[in-house]
Length: 427
Image 1 (cartoon, rainbow, N blue to C red):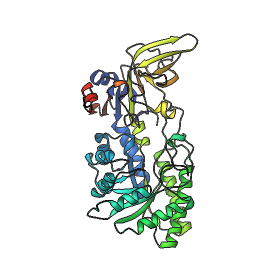
Image 2 (image 1 turned 180 degrees about the vertical axis):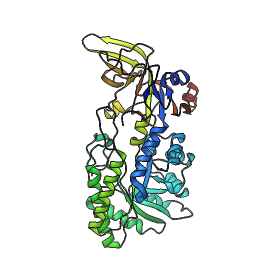
Image 3 (image 1 turned 120 degrees about the vertical axis):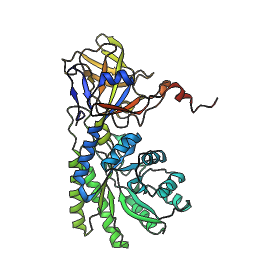
Image 4 (image 1 turned 135 degrees about the horizontal axis):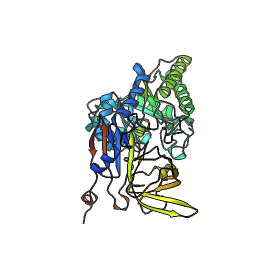
């Protein structure tokens, strides 16, 4: 899915999402503006839930985009939440998620975060010995702390180095090699304040080839077989993480959510049968693959500069402050002109931001209709990790965010002001 399910060019020749004309949204809310399509988010969530059926749970990875209004939409659709910090936990709680529907991750949790998970009856994903040490030093809650052990399966996916997490050389999880994962399970089982329910792994993000997920699932089941033979314990739940890639270009064809889930379920069922294990509940944790296609970034064109024989620069009123991914991961985008997006393209242009960095490039050598100062351009597949990573670099306020559906737009995050920039300063 490259474009939201509600995308169309209306009778005025302008891009419309969720029944809302993007030019009208820009006039009312200003730019840069992030737009989330309710129908697309619900469609993708439904694909995950339908494929999973009664075989497990789908947890939305909150770090992809954590507006409480967006989280509430996914909660009502039937998803749980996976959070990676105390702040994300608070966002999930504000959105109405109950503790049993929340899993808390993180490789360097604070004592306060562990106690917050305990207090709110969330499931804690234990990432290292430090978690176990902090649990031993924490004030117990009114109930046992439900937990899973995160393993590092020693599997490297085909993705960017910066978003690969499942290989042996990783800051995340207990390594299988050397027996660290086994020892962590035994230690958790020996703590009467813990209720160990499962195993967890994550191999990376932006993945199109699902072979790494299948391989990681196999080695995790090998560990489960060994543990059952040694101490009689077997996981009731097994999380395969998320990481499914999305189409950021028209030419890209990632697996669909249903293919991702059904492929994991097939490996899980066959693997458990081979090893004499009961089939545990499967958990998946999509983030990008729900938020990404649902969101778009809307910018207004400002300065235009031609360098004869080199390139034509088109600057917009956003950039790396609201989208760090091109610089951080080499992410590529295929922007559209809001007015007459299907018009014949002019020469190639490079769309750059307004930040004081030469690397503030959003899309290099893309073909668009002739653009002029004041025109609007929109970036599809912009809903994941843009606002989550947004900064105030160069003293720019972060953008507003709207949720659209049925011809209505709802402001779910106001544009920051200069007063917001100064609100934390002491002088």
